Structure formats: C-alpha cells, structure tokens
Length: 466
Image (cartoon, rainbow, N blue to C red; front, side, top):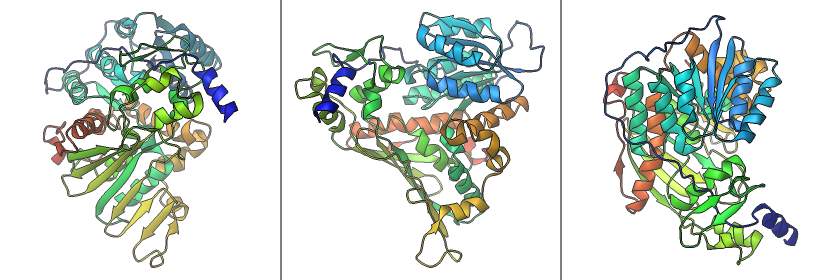
C-alpha cells in the first residue's frame, strides 16, 4: 500500500481536476431545409485524393491518421490544436508515412475557424475535448465541409444535439458520429444475425460503458491547482490530454455522460431513427464514492483532492422505451474497480446474444437450456466488411474496428453516400447524457426523448453496414 501511495502522490503532486473552461454552443436556429454544403472559393483537388483535416491532435487523432493514410487515395491537408506538444508528436507521427507535412494551425481556442475558412477539405475529423465537439462540428459544416466526423459523445446537452441536426439539415453537410464500437466484429455479426431473423422479433437490449477509469482521471504527468470553495479543480499545463478535461465532468455532472459506445450497436439492432425511435427515458444514480475512495486509499485523507465533491454517481442506470415496444437498459460505471465490459445483450422472441460470457442461444438450433459459444455463430454470420477487410484491419486500433469505421466513412465520401452514422444518430445516442441528467435531478422521473428526425423516422430505411 505504501508503494502505491507514493506512486499516487507523485502523479498528483498538488490538487485539482481540469475545469474545461470551454464555452458550450448555443442552440442553433431550427432550420429544417436541407441544402448543399457551401462551396469554397479555393482551387479544387488536382490529384484525386480526398483531403482530410484534423482538429485535436491527441492519441485518438493518431489512430485516425493511421487509418486515413493506410487507405489509398487520401491526404492530410491541415491539423489544428492549441498545444504545441501534441502538434509536434502528430507531425512526427505523420512523417513516418513519408507523406508531405500538413499545414499547422495552433495557438488560440478559435484557431480551428481559421483552418476551416482557409483550407478546402472533403472531410474534417474532430477529436477534441467533449465541450468542443459541437462548436467545431457546427463551424465545419457552416464552412462547407461535405463530411464532418465527430468523436464521441457527439454532444453533451439536448440543445447541442439539436444544433448538430439543425446545421446539418441547413447546410447539407453530412455529420458522422465516429462511434467505433458499432464496427466491433462481434457487434456487426450480432447485427447480421438480427437482420437475418435468428433472434426473432427484438424485445430488449442492454449495454453500457463499464470501464475502470480511475487511473485515467488521475494519470501520470498531472499537475493540479485546487481553489478551495470554488467547486472547480483546474488542471495545469503538464497534464495528460484526457485528464485535463474528462475528470471535471465527474465533478459537475450526474448522469450517463458517455453513452454512445453502448447504445450505438443496440440502436442499430433496433433500427432507431429508421422505423423505430427512442420514446422516453428514466435514470437513477448511486451515491458517489469511487473517486473519493481512490484518492484516500492512494493519497491519504489529507490529500487536497480528498476535499473535492464529486457529483457523478458511481453507477448510473438508464432505462429507455422505444416506439416499437422494446426496452433498453444503459449503464455507466467508470469509478469502480472492475474489468472492462460494454454489457451487450440483444434479446428477441427466438433467442439472444450476451457478450459477457460470449453466449448465444437460438431456439430450435441450440441445445435446450444450454448456451452456445458465440464464436460458433459469429464465424458463420461474420459481417461482409470484416470478412473482406480482416487482413487490413488486423494492425489497426481497438482490435481493427477503427479501420473498418474509417473505411466505411471513406467509402461514403468517395461515392457521395449518406454518412454511415448520421446527425440523427449522433443526436439520439448523445441525448442520453442530457436526458439522464435531467431524470436523475428529478428523482428518476420519466422524460421524453426528442424526435430529432421530426417524424421522418417512420419512413427512413436502415443504412448502416448494409
């Protein structure tokens, strides 16, 4: 315990959690008329390559760069960040591919606007702290970028969700939420089984983000500045990128603040926004204990961080009702000691898949009351994207799903198809955050889900990974 404590004290030498301090986007006007993205006046591409830009140059950006440059016919035009360190690491990373260095935009918080206005892109990928996802996405769409990829969660509030939908509709720019778990091999095989009717009519799903992030929230290199009585813990410049902003959400918010890894694949299985939709949500949260206990266990009761009041309940549970009758349970659990799990369960009238334990049961095909190993089924129902791209995806991040996701987005760009996971998906999946916070604040009250499609969900057809 003493060695652990010394290690912890070295990591968090003073106290504080990085208050993001970044402005949240306001609610965009409710414009519903679709339009073509405005055209830039700069010269068009002359080499046939798709032009990519990146806003935010942390480790997630590097994974996207790997895949963009691994797929022939792409180039990186420009990158943007407010910190020199990540920019230098990204330039060094790009140089490994023996391609021309991109232009660099750096310095002020609004530098990304200069990049968007000065350069011409086919796609801009946004991998910045959560508070900036919507302002940057909106700016890119308004600047005429045809395809905008935004990391997860796409938005933090219901107003921000509407911003994404309204601006995408008004500009004609395709917003794509970069939810890589939708491309996880087992999730795509399960989706294939759902579409082929193996599980019958779908009744219920479970999912979540159950991941011990205590070390991430207090990681190496952090330097804190705690202001007593302020309610904020401000992160110093030596902090690792994610700890600079993620941890502060645990101080100020109480809800499912990271829902899309879980809900994305389940929403695809249930045709959400395409013949089905989320109707209502009720959420509850446990008491907040895990982060405080972690600090005391590793740093002692007198450590400055022990004075912090964390608002985020250790386990947040949201229940969703769907228009076609299904129910979904979504769990957020990041402050507890536990192995990683997304807790997937897809259950229908003829059987189910549960990823914890790797179980499948199909009535009439499985032995009665006995689980099958899911591998047996998933080999047979492997999705065609994985079957055709397995060797190329083998070295990519997150078990290959990052490559499959980027390949699918690039295919949409080249063929001028809709985004694989569009603005309505980004809004509906991300809205769980704001709605769960609202429900918890009201004692678990049922809250209505906005219909971000404005009634079009009834007629829209499935498009993901067909």
